[in-house]
Length: 166
Image (cartoon, rainbow, N blue to C red):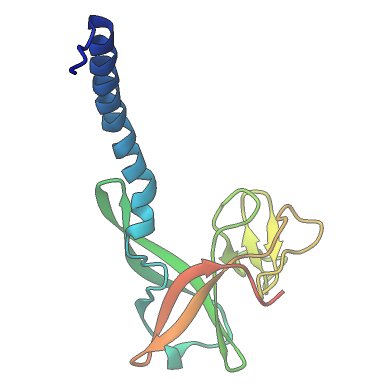
C-alpha cells in the first residue's frame, strides 16, 4: 500500500526544506558571532613590562609609558598609554590619567594653586595623590588604578580596576 504525495504536500515539504536551509544559513553565523568571544583566549590578565625599574620609583608621581596591541575587529594596532606611578610605603601605586568627569587627561602638580594634587584642565577638576576626587570639583569619582607587579626588577602594568585606596 503506497501513499501518493499530493502536489500540495510536495510544495509544503519543498518550502519547509528550503526555508529551513535559509534560516540555518542566517542563524548559524549569528550564533557563531555571539558565542565566539566565549571561546577566545583572554588576555585580560597579561601584564605589560615597562622600562622603569622598581627601585627608581619614588613617592613623587611620575608618568610611566607602556605599549600594548589593541585589536579592533580585524585591525591590530599598537597603542601607547601612560600611568601615574608612585610609591606609597612598600606599595607601588599606578593611577589612570583619565579624569572621571569627561575623560580628559590629568596631570600631577600642574596647577600652581594645588601643587600636590592631580589637576584636570578641562573643568578644573582636582584629585588627591591617592586618586580621590576633591569635593566641590567636577569629578564624581576617584581615578581608576592599574594592577601592578614586578618582572626582573622592572614595573609591570596590567588591567584597569577600581581605586582601592579611597
